[in-house]
Image 1: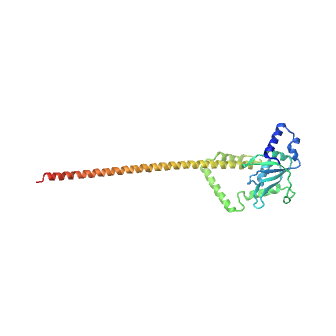
Image 2: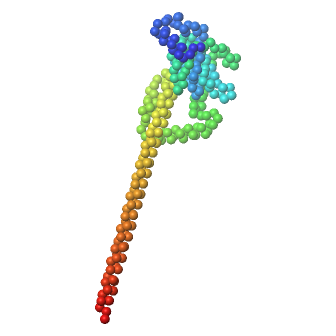
Image 3: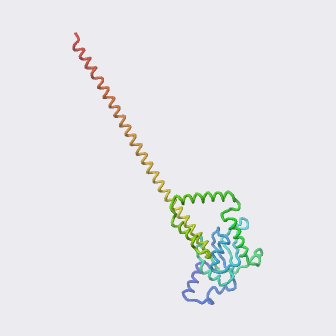
Length: 271
């Protein structure tokens, strides 16, 4: 199997020299219609993989390798096309592509099915399972059904409320337009929607961070204003007390002065 850089270098060389399909390096794998897909995001399901790879041909068999104990994806799969030539397109176009932040490795593969996979192709069965999963609701969790669903509904309700209070972000507008206007027949639509949702999440996180900084600055300003107001009020009360004390001292001084004069006068006129 070839590495991503080797495949990209081979393709570049063939494009530059206009190599015919018969002389292409792909011709070494005319005996197999399987490809190896590595670097898959662990959250992708079989249906997601089919959505991405069906744009280059009709898949007939897929084995997304999962952990036997947990059932979680191991991040790689083997896919077979109905037409062997579709493998050339998938390898040329998707090897080195980025999906949900991960780099895909796609290459030709001579794959031998395991006994438990059987000899029959399984895409029809996978499509049926995917349809049933969608009908059951993509937002349900198998182990924590009620709790996870109710928590998600509260979160969605809160998000809807936030959107009503603030103008929509550019990324949110683009997501809504993509969902409503993009061709439903395009097998890449789900992938593009997922990619746009990630952009929306990043934009919302950035917006919230900016709002927190602004709120923090406003709180600091209010705190400084209150502190300044308290200090000014304290100074005014202090000056007011000083004025009252001064007034009392002057009043006492005036009240004492006449009595002294009267005592002095009584002494002067006494016989």
